Length: 230
Image (cartoon, rainbow, N blue to C red):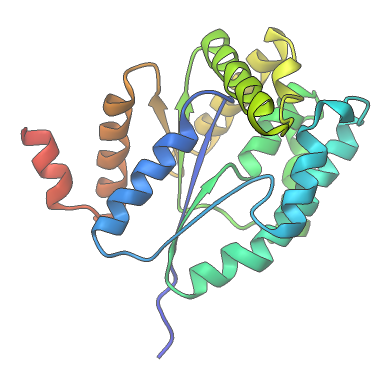
C-alpha cells in the first residue's frame, strides 16, 4: 500500500524576517509528534541547486541580468522539485521549504520589475503548477529585516568566506517592492497564504505559527492547546 501524500508547507518573507529560524522551530515541534519531516530551502536544496545558489547570492555576480537571475532560480527549483520535494511528498513526509515560487514572484517579479505573469508562466510550464498546501508569509518592517540580514550575512562571510550578500546590497525601494509583491500574492490567494506579523518576539511568532498549522492540518493537537492555556 502506498503512503498517503504528504503536506507541503513553505515559509516566505523578506531576508532577515526570521523565517528560517521559525521553520526549524516548527520542524522540531512536528518531529516531537513523531511525524516524518523533510526540511529544505531555495535556492538550493540539492547539490546542483546549491551551486546555483552560490552563483545567485555571491556579490561578484552583480552584473547578472534580471531575466538570467529568474532563469537560474527556476533551474534550481525544477531540480529541487524532482529530486527532493515530490519524492518526499510521495513518501508521506511533511515538507517544510524555506522559499518557493512566491519568492520569485516577489523578488524578481516585484523587486526586479519583471512582473508576475512571466514568473507564473514559468511556474506552470516548468514546475507543473505545484502549489504548497500552506504558505506562511512572515511580514516584517523593511528596514529592520534588511539590516538584520546584512549583519547576519556579513558575520557569515567573515567566519567562513561564504558570500551571500548580493541581494542585501539592494536599495530600500527594491525591498519595498518585494514586500508589496508578497502582500499582493497573499491578497490573491488567501486560502493558501497566511500572513503572520513577524514584528513580535520569536516566541510570539512561533506561537502564531503553531496555531495556524494546527488549525489547518491538526498535526500538533494538545501541544498547541497546552501552550495557549499556559
